[in-house]
Amino acid sequence: MGKILVTGGAGYIGSHCVIALINSGYDVVMFDSLEIGHIETVKTLQSIQAKGSVVDFIQGNLQNLSEISDVFKRHNIDSVVHFAAYSQVAESVKEPQKYYYNNVYGTLNLLNAMLENNVKNIVFSSTAATYGNPVYAPIDEKHPQIPVNPYGKTKLMIENIMDDYDKAYGLKSVRLRYFNVAGADYQARVGEWHNPETHLIPNILKSTFSDGKTFTLFGDDYDTKDGTCIRDYINVEDLANAHVLAIKYLNNGGETNFFNLGTTEGNSVKEVFKTCEDVVGKSVPIEIHPRRAGDPALLIAANNKAKSVMGWSPEKTLRDSITSAYNWEKILQERIQKKEMAEI
Ligand code: UDP
Image 1: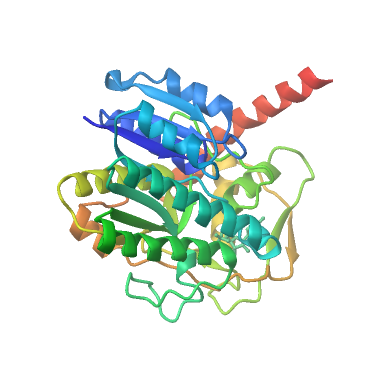
Image 2: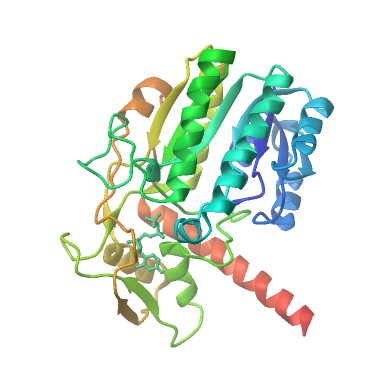
């Protein structure tokens, strides 16, 4: 089994992917700046000794070409899974420079280092945000890609760069376009840990931890069945498994390709909220706020392509995702409290 470089391996999706890779017998080198990722996550991943896989960690930033080049010199890397990026839509509108520089320039450095070292396979963390406002639903891979914010634009630019690098240098890429990623490792070893947290499920769950805390719902006047936005929530472990299949696809000589990762099912914000209340066994007061800028009413994936080409299919339900996210959130809350206690 080869050695896989995972950039952003200490982050939310990256860490679940590292577990999926070591469960499949790959050795992993994690490269992470720890600006968003956590050292605790690195330690947890290194303590998992599945099938004797080795998990190395290098702290570094893709914006420094020498730091990422060094990784290829020190390790015999077979393929790359690239997560390291900024991913907050609203922040990308306010600070586009930060996004273009980190996401696009950082990826150019990574690709330079790969080509320099003759590494030709990369799985890239792309997004449904590259499609922009949906013209039809469910969204398949032929849907026009017209991103409406700098975050989505950076991801589309990278997809385009990868196509050109394939034509000119034979770099093979699989771009995985995620819909709404949810849930945590079923053993609650890793999970979603953002600061600040903007995503729906962790925000609802966080509001269940202290009495009287309300959940803020952005917009109940959309043209949907209950007036709230509909999204396609894909479980993070199902998502991680798709990355392993993508590596295998490339290693078996697969051509550059791109796939949606979603469930094809839509759930409204109110449905997600009710399922969270049900899983936690507690009711939470809701505050209705105006619509959040840039939120489309409905985003649902068509996923037949990933099924037919890579043999991937999601297995977990929304309830599974919420249950695992809740189990993780309990651990996270304890950790945060301990840290706060230690600082007092
Ligand atoms: N949302 C909400 N309250 C929150 C966070 C999110 O009502 O605290 C809504 C948001 O407006 C959107 C949906 O939940 O309609 C999913 O948002 P999220 O940020 O999780 O993912 P996105 O679809 O923006 O990638």
